[in-house]
Image: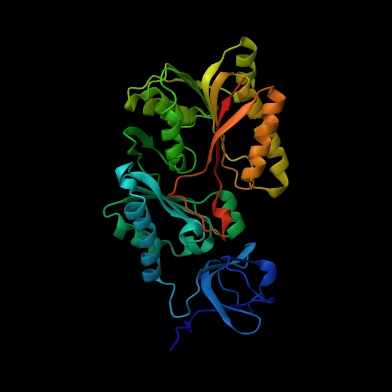
Length: 392
């Protein structure tokens, strides 16, 4: 007999549903008479009475339903989470073989791993859990149990951004701050500190970009803009750059960056500064670099602010191009998910035009393969990377 989970609430759609996307928005959903709490697991019923799937319901969120399971015979329970998380870990360990490269990688990448609203990063024995949905937060004990089975003896640090808590209508002050972890990536060591730095404390999504760029810096003068905890700059120093300067406005992350440089006996000059006046002054002095990295934080979460965000990207990149030697390399990034790759490359074209430079694009990339996205759910793709050579 098919498993209907008779004890689960049912939520009905008001319009036909023909998509394979896991999100169903509020306007397509009939409001249940008995209102389930945000994040309740429900059965989803179409307008003609057919069973569509099983997932999280949130009457307070724009995303009213997050479909987790489309096999009617499969319950979404603790065992379901254990299987789904085991599958995600197997991809990283058995297919991608990331343990040979690093002990820091993304364990779960939300929709990309069929776990909408959940992101988990691993830093050695420390697992950092970030909630993007009330459903994942509501069922966190199942998640911790499944993760502990994959990483025996692990520690947890959990959090959710304030804007997510407001959108999803749940309240979480975060777990007790975890002690930092020391991780190794391509032989280079970093201190990941989720309690003391932005977001998860270290950006594993740039692992492949750091490694690729570091093969082209020996003997070069390198400028790392928005350097955060020092990833690109420290790679460059370890790989033989003649000089490395790291710029960031946040003194807390710079303190971690300086510690990371010491971990690797790497000489990096870190400067606390706003990159706009700093770059203008450097350009006016004729202070030029062989390699410039520009990796700013997310500029907007608001669709109405995409144009201003692109304008800010343009201004940053134009100034960055102004301090590059002819023949130099620019590695430029955007982690603003609402900015598409085409928009990002179009911005870069305009920045080069206004800077009076000719850009040769060598490589376009994104996050590492431990940040997968489903072809029919492109929302999980966010990072854009362009590696360019300035020809004049």
